[in-house]
Image 1 (tube, each protein chain N blue to C red):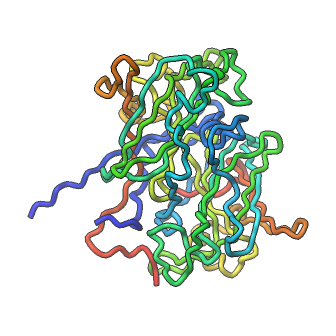
Image 2 (cartoon, one colour):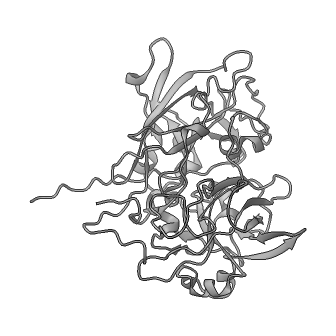
Length: 211
Length: 242
């Protein structure tokens, strides 16, 4: 029997988010209030299970200057290591109905700092035949001067043994490149903060993934 | 067969602007120079956030009314619609589409925009919608104006609307810009010129769609969006371990 040729369209080309990305995606930061519901950098609700953490960082350009107009989104599993998505079939892990696992924010126009309030994700099953993935958060970065959104992952520096087995981290050269994916843990006023600075270019350039 | 957790097809980067496009000056210091590391899809890439209608307000897809205070905004009323599909040609249902733009004079409602054209008191310039069960979307707005920007001394952006789209997996995340058929600024624009493949760039130009115009009210433009597709397999999907 002759099989029909599969339809194959081409992806729409990317274009930069531009300097005014805040208007569309985080209008409160652009300076006006238009939507009843705004998407924010707070992923947790009162009932979210897991260890509460804050992740924060800054973004630097190739001259070492702060990039203050970045949009950052994160996507992560819950504290048990399960994504709130039907493709995740890790049935043995609980779903946390109130935890979508996604957030967005912009870097501060003055300080350049961005942050999220979330929970630490659990380890996630790897591709078949591979070891589990260490706890990590997926980041997507868009801004003026960035022609196509940049994908990277935040791993936790204090998860040394899980990180040592992680199938993605093991694709990355040891040393600065691997370290660029590790967030360092700090305690501030009794709260746990993981600091993750991103370098778009230069000797400390962050590892980005073609996913 | 394509499953909810089927792996994504390798992204064809030849139809996207590379990170470093020196004619667009801001890209010079913001472009990574090392090779990216290619990843096979894992659960982290094939999954992504979902959004519900309850999160949107009734006027979120109507930029003519969603910030109207004492009257309606100034400018050319238009209707923008299109089909969001993946590279496999399948409509992408129930996915969030967001859009933002300048007003008819080319001015953004943004604290960092200092262009001398005035803010329109009745125009916010942003909206959002969710595609229907077949992947179609639409919204009403005012046609944005072109505006000058600091790249070269006499650089002007063609009229455009920014789009943000999700898809069903986080690896499909895309931001792009829609241009308007017939605008003489399009092919002078370094952001458009950054796309190496002219036929790909042409797909960012929305044709006038008289058939969808509302007589005596507004013209229409059609902007279709294609997100990344997934690998088709003959056998049971094997992405997840255990």
